[in-house]
Amino acid sequence: MNKEGHVLNAVLLGIGLGYILEPAGDFSTFRTIAEVTIPVTLGALFPDVDTAFGRHRKTLHNFLVLGVFLAYPFVFDNLQFVWLGVLTHYMLDLAGSKRGLALFYPWDKEFNLPVGVSTSSKYANLATLLITGAELLIIGLLVLYAPAYVPQELIDHGTTALGV
Ligand SMILES: [Zn+2]
Image 1 (cartoon, rainbow, N blue to C red):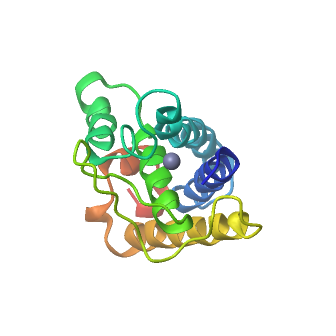
Image 2 (image 1 turned 120 degrees about the horizontal axis):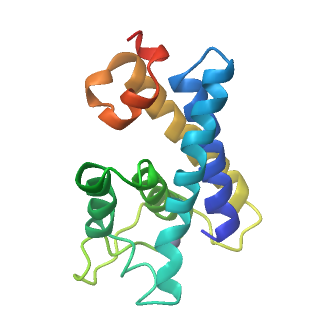
């Protein structure tokens, strides 16, 4: 997926998350959107830095990199929500494009899902919208029915939906 797709995905995800976590549609919703959208968008742009440094779809498209961003808020109390952008970047590449990712890099093998359109396809934006919708559905269902599986970070920052 290209930069346009990743930014579209991240911004829509941030807006959707705001409404999932703080559904009232009031100031708290917009505060959550503002809080989440920028770090998620930055995270969604990060993996493709490996087009310039390292090997594309390998060096920065793997679980090790995701783990670093997941650990950062715990270790340094910094970079909250950036991991979500990195994760959604991987999901969009896996489900939305033809080529796979070397998820276990430095092992070179690239993994892929048997769906997706070529990056230059006129359906690329449609694929991005469908994948974003599926992601928001999964997050929404988790928040509603299985909050124990929702990362603590999201619960801490959006409490209305969970009634706490
Ligand atoms: Zn990528």
